[in-house]
Image 1 (spheres, rainbow, N blue to C red):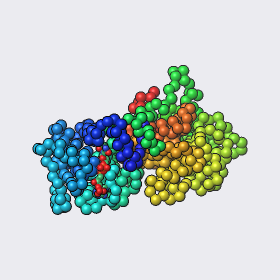
Image 2: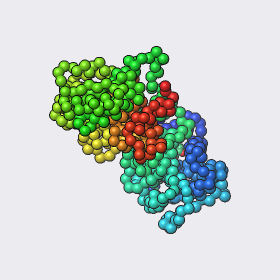
Image 3: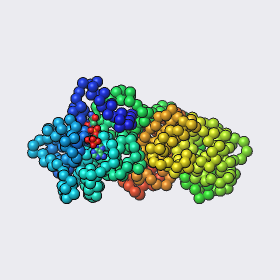
Image 4: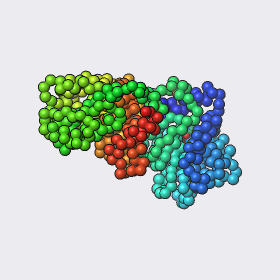
Amino acid sequence: MLEIISGSSVKKLDTDFITEKGITSHRLMENAALAFCDWFEENYHRNDKVGIFCGPGNNGGDGLAIARLLWRKGYDIIVFLVGDTEKASADCRLNRELLPDKLPAISMSSDDIAHMEFDLNVVVDAMLGIGVNRPLAGDFLNMVVKLNDLSNVRKVAVDIPTGLPADECLQGEALKADVTVSFQYPKFSLMFPEHAGYVGVLHVVGIGIGNKFMRQFTESKYYLQPSDISKRHLNFSRFAHKGDFGRVLLVGGSYGSIGAVRMSAEAALRTGSGLATCFVPACGVDVIQASLPEVQVISSSGEKRLCWDEGDMGVNRFDAVGIGPGMGGSAETVTFLESFLNVYKGPKVIDADAINILSNHKKLLNYLDKDAILTPHIKEFERLVGHCENHKQRLGKALEFSSEHSCVLVLKGAHTSISFPDGTQYFNSTGNKHMATGGAGDVLTGMITSFLGQGYGTKNAVLCGVFQHGLAGEIASEDKKRGTIATDIIQAIPKSYLQLNVD
Ligand SMILES: NC(=O)C1=CN([C@@H]2O[C@H](COP(=O)(O)OP(=O)(O)OC[C@H]3O[C@@H](n4cnc5c(N)ncnc54)[C@H](OP(=O)(O)O)[C@@H]3O)[C@@H](O)[C@H]2O)[C@@H](O)CC1
Ligand SMILES: [K+]
């Protein structure tokens, strides 16, 4: 499990680590540079023309060490020094001295920056890292603006794009990287959607600081990795029968929106549910039975909208429930949801229109408990908790909501966050932009519900569901790119198990 820690903790952790290990800060920087170069070699050819832009701090020190190491490996490198070299940190100076004489290193004056012409395929940004303490101005700003204007040049940020603060929202400008290679721990601000255009694709590379050492710095924020997920999956014996894989109920749909709950049900089956049942308005029964023969259907007495009839409607025989997709928000549906939550006592995923109903009828929030998982996207979340200025505030409110209502809150988007009542917050590392397509959320609801029904505890169900949903999206979009649709994600769920080595 990778920890996400604040910029100030990163510095303290690095200092404590080198003291305890008896190594120099230069050695740790060399580890960081080596880790970056390993990643770089896998992704770029030696005939690429690489410009490495280095500032005066330790981020610049990393850049200079990277330049030396890549040059020795035969890359075509040119170094550009930006900022006041008089202010160079000790390790930056040392790496400057270690640059081979034949490696070109140019100190960039303001005039040079203004008139600079580029003949590069790859830009490595090591101007500023987590030490940035104010908005960019002067030479740094001018250089960043010039680099941002370059097209057909891949930009790779070392640790964090220049100008982006580690823990706060960006003020002013920052480098727009295609890829960010961050050291050991992803910085908090790399998770914010506002920063997506600056961070690009995020890779985290280890620099030798073990988890045991990091635990003392924990800020209860984690970045999910494949190895964290594989071990959370249950193993089923060869004697398992369909009852062991759980009986789940997917509740939703209204006239014109039956597909949503149908997709949840199919996703639940592809995730491994033994039996899936849909509870839909009468108009949805034939649609579901004709298009998904594996599911059973319960018809609500309402023709176009879900209506609650007498009694408990037998819903407690299900191991888990996913409720909300496509259900709409009519008065009958509000009554339906309230009756359902009043009667059904098992684990449940509450999604989409059901979340909007909770927002409009706050007394229904009293039905939330430790067995409830809410999965809003950003707009649904803000309907629930009110407007948020930025994602940092949103993440704080997600934790507050989870603690106040003792439920799990999944805030969907790039790096989906999962907040638990104990104050821990997990961030997803899978998924991509091609998953921003109608129905992707309904698929997630089906997947988490399926894991709950298979007997996974709430925590394992939600972490496995979110991670594997993103993974299935990546697999689905490999050859479909922006043509990916939600049912493609469902079809890719079995392959996501293969990638995680779970049978
Ligand atoms: N052992 C370790 O710690 C390891 C650290 N590692 C690496 O170190 C990086 C952090 O290094 P760092 O702390 O030296 O900060 P860094 O980002 O280089 O910038 C500091 C310089 O910028 C200046 N400055 C600030 N804001 C500015 C602005 N807006 N505009 C202009 N100037 C500005 C500030 O000077 P100031 O003007 O504030 O006096 C100072 O000179 C980290 O991201 C990682 O890459 C890895 O090697 C692993 C081991
Ligand atoms: K950087």
